[in-house]
Amino acid sequence: METNEQVHVDSEFRYTLFPIFYSIVFVLGVIANSYVLWVFVYLYPSKKLNEIKIFMVNLTVADLLFLVTLPLWIIYYYHQGDWVLPKYLCNLAGCFFFINTYCSVAFLAVITYNRYQAVTQPIKTAQATTRKRGICLSLVIWVSIVAAAAYFFVLDSTNVVSNKAGTANVTRCFEHYEPRSIPVLLIHIFLVFGFLLVFLLILFCNLVIIRTLLTQPMPMQRNAEVKQRALWMVCTVLAVFIICFVPHHMVQLPWTLAELDFQTNEFHQAINDAHQVTLCLLSTNCVLDPVIYCFLTKKFRKHLTERFHSMRSSRKCPLATMESGTEVVLPLSQAPVNSLKN
Image (tube, rainbow, N blue to C red; front, top):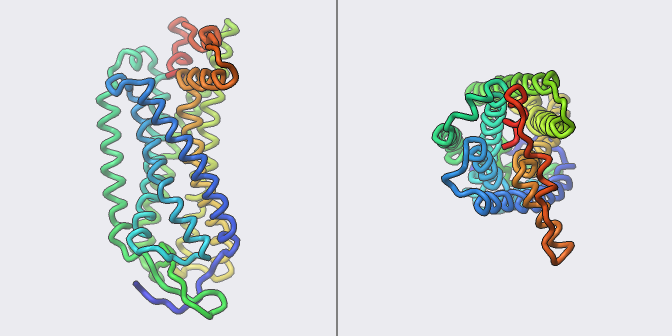
């Protein structure tokens, strides 16, 4: 454990914000993601999971990995940024944070590209057997990102600094960089620009999907409702991606430059404050992912509706007519909208 007596720039509002915010995310995220996995097991035999649903399951697992470490971060910020737990738990929390962030980005990217193919090549996509491709892509994503995250597990992740009053020392977790470290700077440059490329791919694919849906003739009222739902889902996916991930990566590089002493102290304080806020936004993807990619699909909506009505009444409510509006058969010219309703 390295000792550093210099008083570091701090954003004290985080010691109130993070315990409250992370507690809310933890409760909602665990409930939502656990329910998603339970419904997948209940509704879909493993051999019948297609490519898009395989990606959804993996996205949910990535979210749960981060959520199980949130109590550690809550304790950390509750103790005013003092890591009072064993050191290896700091490494574990940092690893899972990295894995969740970039597994989520990767699985959101492949899910978006899957929807893009469903719109641009609906017949070919409908005829293709994509289960094997989904498993292989998922394995590649997990192996690549877990291998990269292993660096954070073996890293000396804690350091000791003086508190603001200078009266005591506190142990920080993943809050120390060697001044003007070029390797650290290059790693963050690679992560930020790699994310930028993925985001441009997601942006392009979603814009094509939106344009295709808007220019597609929809003579029937039911078909128009299906298109409206598909447009709403695609726009929400893009909006949530921008809200959760883009702010963090926009701030990450300037914040890294400040941490490495490439910027002035005045700038450092401002960018550190912004960095804390983007960390909160980043964690919300654990709550929003299951809403967008799971609860908006047909079987999940039906399952939730059945559970809702069973709580309101002891008798069974026939739901077939309620779901018929989402199960319309379109001509081949309108196949892209049907392709979006996995």
